Image (cartoon, helix red, strand yellow):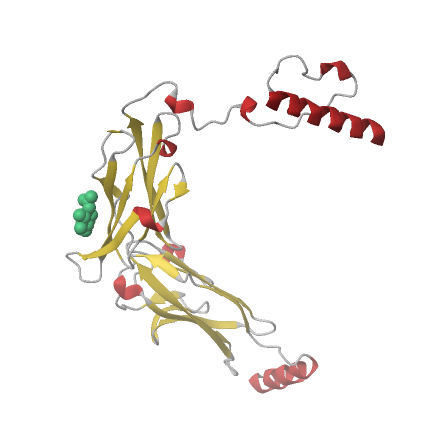
Amino acid sequence: MRKYLLIATLLLSKQAPVSCVRLLELRVPAHAAEGGEAILGCQFDMERDILYSVKWYKDGREFYRYVPDSQHPISHFATPGIMVDVRRSSSTVVTLVHLTRESAGLYRCEVSGEAPLFATVHEEKYITIYLLPETKPILTGLKEKYNVGDRVRANCTSSGSRPEAQLKWLINNRLVGKNYIRGPWYRATMRDDVTETILELKFTVGSHHFNFDTMELKCQATIAPLYQQETVYQVLRKDILPMDSFTDIPELGEQPVPTFPDFGDTSKLPLEDETDAAGTELHLDKLLTLFLLLINF
Ligand SMILES: *[C@@H]1O[C@H](CO)[C@@H](O)[C@H](O)[C@H]1NC(C)=O
C-alpha cells in the first residue's frame, strides 16, 4: 500500500514539481525584552503531504515538538533560557515566557511531512534579548525658576539597560544642538552587562528659550526598536517683565505685510492711518500693486 502511495506521490510530483511541504513564514521577533514574552510563528503549507511533526530548535537544540498523530501532541524539553507556555502553543505558534539573557540565540522551525518521504523544510532567525530600563529617565540638577543669564546644568540618567539607551535633550520640543550637551557617560552597574547612561544639558538661559514665561525641558531615552520613554520638566521664568515676554513675537505692523485689495470694495485700502515716509512708500507700493492687478483684470 505504501509503495503505491509513493508511486502516486511521485506521479503527482511530476505534474507539480513542488508538491511537498513548504514553509510560508517564520515569524520570530528580532528583539525581545528580558522578563517579557516572545511569540514565535511558523506558517507552512503541506501541499499534498500530511504533517508529521513541527520541531523548534534553539542554537541547534530541540526544545519543542508538535506531533499531531500522537496522544500528547506537544512535548517540550528543558533548555536554558526557554520556558514554553503550552496553553498558548500549537502546530504553528510557540509562546516563550520569562525570557532571560540566555533566551538570545538562533531559532529554527522545522516542519516534516509523513512517511515515507519525511520531506523536511526549515528556516531560522536570531533573537536578541534587550534589558529595558526599569524607570523613566531621571532629571537632576534642575531648578524651578531661572532668570535670563542664568546657567542651566542638569543631568538626565537612564537606569540600567542592555544595550545602553540613547539620550536626547529637547527644549520646547526642539532637539538641542551639540554645544548644549556634555557626555554621554556610561556607568557600569551591579550587573556587568547592564549600563546606565547619563547626558548633561548645559546652557545660558536667553529670553528666546522661554515660551512666554515657561520653558519645557525634556529628556528622551530610546532603545530601538523596543523602548522609548521621556521625562518632562516645566521651568518658570523668575523675572517676568510683562512687556519683555512679548518681545519675541513680531507685531503685525512691524513689517510691510503685503495687502491685496478686495475687488468688491477698493475704497478699503488703508490710506488714512499712516503719515511717515515709510508709510507713504508702503502706500505707493500698494497703489502700484492695485494698478497692476487692475490692468491684469
Ligand atoms: C552629570 O554626570 C556627570 C557624570 O557622572 C558628572 O561628571 C557631572 O558633573 C554631572 N552634572 C551635573 C550637573 O550633575
